[in-house]
Length: 220
Length: 214
Image (cartoon, rainbow over all chains, first blue to last red; front, side, top):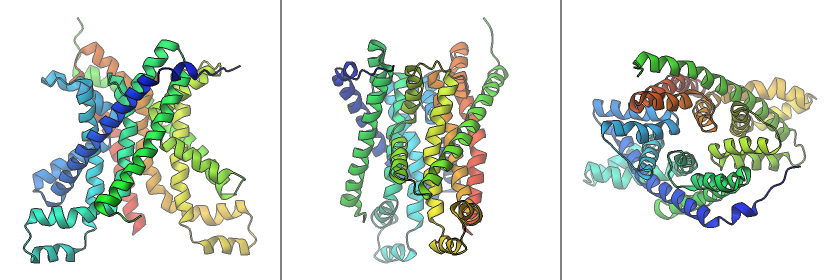
């Protein structure tokens, strides 16, 4: 007979809440910086010189074809031997930013490439500088075009951050492990944390959709 | 004190890579089987199948794979089954793959024009014949590129089985790094081995995408 006991897990709700806050915080920082990195990389791949284009291309392919957990371990365990010592939180944020940046670059590039030529010509004929053309004319509608894909990718990175508990970043999965190491209710603790991740994913999707309509005028 | 050469590190990682490949193949094959079954259940309009499968897909796509692995591992133990880590990993990765594959393939089947179904109907083909002779041959053509693309996700996903203690490439990397005190070299090698596995598959998927869209 299987007996489940969720009460012993739920009494530790302050810990779960703290973990949830850390996961949300990591995601917020990583999403902002990762998006910026992605846009910069997309620009570099479309307008940069040959060396820059190749370097960014190599970065994107390298990240997209290796697991996040290995990237995280490389940053946290590997970089200290080069003299770069990081706290678990910083290592997590850096790994998440590097990871999201590569995927966001490809998504943003697809959006930018779909810009009608006439838009750019019109902007140039108004004597806008190249930077203005990119930031004010090309980028906002490009992001609006690919916003659903971008939203999906940010959620994937949020869910992937569960791995950060493995280097002792005190996020949601870390606290789930902590709780069941104390009360031995492994399945229940994991189940509750998984439910919280699902809730956060739904909330984040909603939030990003609203952000898209507000800032980028994404049509639903 | 034993000295480890780069070749020692690489050789041991290569040996562990076999398990990553094997786990990927098992999860992908199992996922394809379950995913296809779910798809057929949806197409055949079994009562509740459409909603049930949609919920199943959402649950797997909306929660971390790591948590799914833990749930399989602890859940099986709770049922009194003392399963090894690789079996729990196989189960979780199979279910995870099936959720993604069934959703990818649903899109492919829906892309087939309605007229094809109606034509099959008017020829008095039953559901099995319609799927086998009319829908599958056309849907498969457009399904191959995204399916190959998803295979890369599965290979990368198997890295999380290391957390359950299954000694595949990532876990071997952690163990070797602990033994050699050379985490930079070891994790760089691990990353390159994953890249060597995944990049050809990604490149293949991209090429297929170009040739089928033409």
